[in-house]
Amino acid sequence: MIKKQILTLAILFSVGAFAKPVTVEMVDLGSNQVVGTVTITKSEYGAVFTPDLKGLPAGVHGFHLHENASCDSVVKNAKTILGGAAGGHYDPKGTDQHGTPWSDDNHLGDLPALYVDASGTATQPVLAPRVELSKPRTKSSDVTNRALMIHAGGDNHSDHPARLGGGGARIVCGVIK
Ligand SMILES: [Cu+2]
Ligand SMILES: [Zn+2]
Image (cartoon, rainbow, N blue to C red; front, side):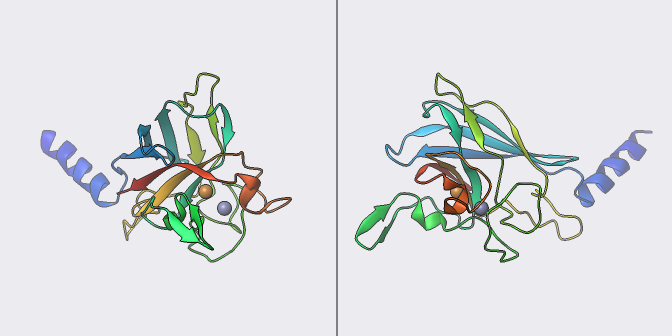
């Protein structure tokens, strides 16, 4: 009986039915202080991003997977861009379009916006249906070696009237290991 259960578990692991949750330490790019974590877990319906963050500006914030595993600043045209080394929204299909988390013709890194309450706390999870923590067969992951980014403004999931949902400056970032 026990042997059979162990065998079942071994099979489930080998097909990637269980993907280990990934916890990302999030850093305020202005102060360099850790403001909490976002834990990414696999569900039957996609990846769930659960924030446990404090000290953020209240409201709705653009929230994306960016392509590079770095939160460093870059200098462009003599201006410092906080979090610039994270690169653009993760876009493995090269769509060059910003859109909704549930459509295929835009960045894979487009997540639902993050809600921060009046006290500056974010605990409300969001679901990204296309993002896979471990893919069948290859077991490669969409999240490993990327950056998780929170923007100053919201996200209308469109490139109009402003590009990339209009979220503007990068305020909080975490490298996903
Ligand atoms: Cu972003
Ligand atoms: Zn995007």
